[in-house]
Image 1 (cartoon, rainbow, N blue to C red):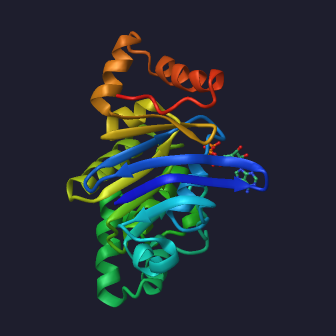
Image 2: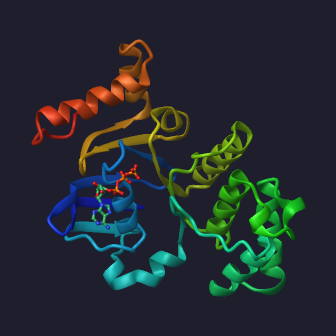
Amino acid sequence: MIRLEGVVKSYQNFVAVNGLTLHVPPGSVFGFLGPNGAGKTTTIRMLTGILEPDEGSLLVFGKTYRKNRNDILNRLGYVPDRPFLYGKLTAMELLRFLGSLRKIQGAEVQRRAMDLLDQFNLADFANQLIERYSHGMRQKLVLASALLHDPDLLIVDEPMVGLDPRAAKQVKELILQFARQGKSVFMSTHTLEVAAQLCHQVGIIHKGKLVADESIPNLTKRIEANDGDLEAVFMALTKDLERDQDREVVPF
Ligand SMILES: Nc1ncnc2c1ncn2[C@@H]1O[C@H](COP(=O)(O)OP(=O)(O)OP(=O)(O)O)[C@@H](O)[C@H]1O
């Protein structure tokens, strides 16, 4: 679903993503971890066609944005880290509007919107103005918006931030259900714990470079070797790179 080879992206002279290579197969949840400023959002902006890589190859569904932009975007759902929601619309109005942009209209958009609002326990608030929604409700609505056109790939920047345990559980279940249908999820997160619960594969980025790319069983072994301390594993991986900037990805 996603294949990156040697992707580089700089802002003026600052290299934010530095030779990134990773692969996300169908039916999998890929967790993209890293500390603040590691290059996660920059990578996601390239994956969603907002930014273009300076170097390297970036394929989504085996296609490039340069040649197949619309094909890719029609099959992609994206939840940004700071989504904008227009507060003067109701949830249903928002979903109808987004549906019209995607050419999903009438009874079809109404049915899909109600199904999604129902899945997120928002059906009772379908006709309430978004400005009256809590943070968690807004987060769930943004996810519902990203799923309206039934995408094959969901890209989510920090899906759990600010969610209470109940909302977080719903979002986790939805992500897992999505992958069970043979679709893929690429999600960034700061927390190894979220990744360990949800993801099949985890990539850890630090200062624009991938410092680890491993399956959850391998990651779990590593965590156990550190007395169950997730953060210790994360700190060790990112600290190593500070000592040796040219180090290769940790082999597993
Ligand atoms: N538009 C920009 N212009 C200049 N530098 C930028 C720009 N956007 C990001 N950066 C820098 O690029 C680096 C990577 O930023 P990015 O937002 O990709 O990191 P991140 O891993 O998503 O961080 P966070 O977890 O804090 O959101 C940071 O040092 C950031 O300051």
